[in-house]
Image 1 (spheres, rainbow, N blue to C red):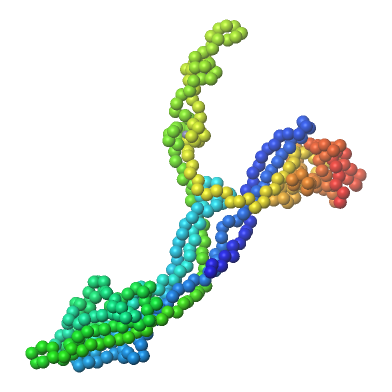
Image 2: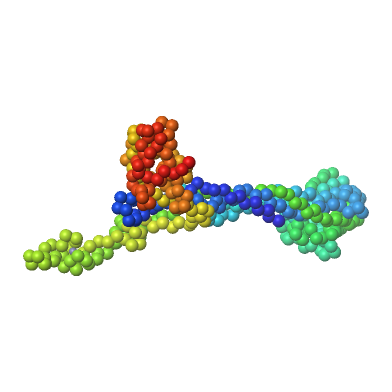
Length: 408
Ligand SMILES: [Zn+2]
Ligand SMILES: [Zn+2]
């Protein structure tokens, strides 16, 4: 029944910069930059079908709602049922938001449902007493029969009824709770029986006649389906942190360890002059303090609940620092910004700039423009990475004296 249409959006990426120093050329410093895009795991609201059963209890055709016997008139009706939209909240740990390192994220799913009220079948009983004697309801038998089986009232359900006293010439309303709806929906006939209602008295006030009153109701139910929304909310809460109990927040292991330089002696004998020197590492104590291994020296223990979402895309950019020289000076230089993959201006007077290459195959040249001339150059010299490119614009056509010109 639940109709998920989950959306996948891309979150702004988190970027991890790592430095890789390698390559034969001693002048080229290889750099690598990994740009990660994470899946959006946060859900959008979704439409769901919500079903509920609405009971309908109607007087049967043979039943008259208002009945008069002797001096007593009684009417019975069943309160109608209505459905109310409710929401059930469920909270679960969700994925971290990549840019929010110090926070856990929680998903709150709000699921709609309907509550039907009242929860029990409720009878509204209206009694009018035109006799000269007060009518005591405790003397009247009250029975409710559902599909031929007598329903036994929990004691509280008839409390008001049993206290009932209707004075001569007065009318009163009573509410009596019957069974819960679950038991009712499948029931076909509800029979309400008032047994031995005094309807006539002699002059001394003694009852001379008692009558029974009865009502029949037919139960049915309607299945209702409605379209409602499941709502998702995401809340960020700071990761729970505690002071490290091992080092009491100092970041240092409280225990002292034997100094490894002087083997705990506090001093050593020089091999050169044979004299004894105080150990500088432990300042002659023979003991040293080390970083707390429990908190890695931070003094704080963290208890994160959220983890990073699955990686959607991972792009590695490679490049190295390059000095661009032009003749004459004052050219504009553009290089790819590895955070966005878009060409951006590099400040000319910076001695080094960094061109970026997308995973080695898709090379993005440095674009150098001067006075309407454009040169796209890869920083290679004789096939090897070069830390310098030189372009001469003075003839009116760019002449690359160092670097590889990329054809338009
Ligand atoms: Zn030492
Ligand atoms: Zn610690």
